[in-house]
Amino acid sequence: MALDNLISVTFSAGDLATIDDAINSIEGVLVGKTINLTPELRQQYGRIAEQNKLFVNKAKTYMEQYPQHVPGFLNKPEFDKDYTAREQIEMRLQRLSSLTEQLSDTKTLLDHDNYHNSITFYRNMKYLSEENVPGSNVIYTDMKQFFITTSAQKPTNPTENVDPKDTEK
Image (cartoon, rainbow, N blue to C red):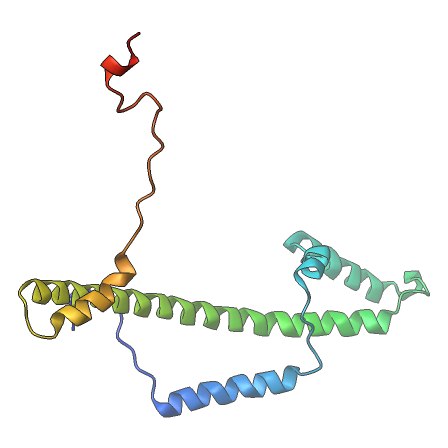
């Protein structure tokens, strides 16, 4: 194990099957119940801020305390249904967001470890190629392509690199 190995984790086939089954189960339950907004619609509707959630909570409380003040054109049962579903989704979304962040952070560290170990291997192949170890040059040349950069030409001043004698009249 390398000295700078940041993480070491494995998933058994059973672990992956359990995760996949859980995700498939969640996807199955959500079919027909969730919406996938376009970026434009997502921007149009946005999200309500924490202050507005408090406002919605307060309105719900008052609608329940004073049902006589709820306008007839406001569908209170639908409001309650939406409110309950939003609460149910939010609780699960927080849990899923936490899991997503954990998986993403774990992947970041795994990517870091893999990249740095690959760099170490590449440097070793470069060294072996310079030492003319049989077969190493092909590997080094193949891997070197990932590090070839074209140098951007520095804009030059028109008077730069001009012999002063050439500018005299």
